Image 1 (tube, rainbow, N blue to C red):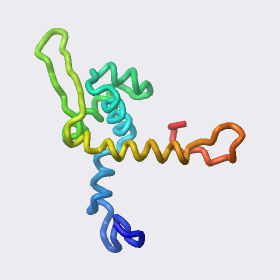
Image 2 (image 1 turned 90 degrees about the vertical axis):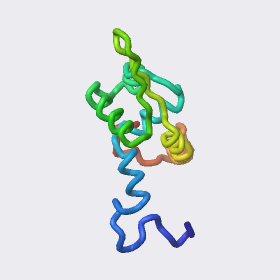
Image 3 (image 1 turned 135 degrees about the vertical axis):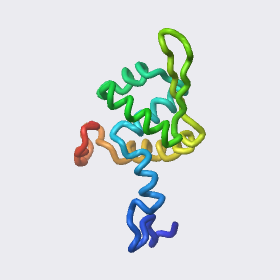
Length: 129
């Protein structure tokens, strides 16, 4: 992409672009956080994810995991035992998003809140502070 181009050409609706498609996959409040934890831990069970995220409800986590699985970003492995055991991991497609996640981390480090004594930057409008 050249400097003068954008990923949303004039006259094209956002959902009809690669950018819009990507946002539709990772745009949920917790989706990138779930992908982050799975990238860090490789395989996690439902309650491990819940504890790691902390602020997510059981229902929201269940919905996000189902959406991520339906979109092919994570794998769900169910073990036929009692009590039931289910593990989640990144799929190949999910792993392909890791460079985007790493770039977001780098951007946040460069543009996030300054160390005390530095010039002030605006606080984010979201609850991720």
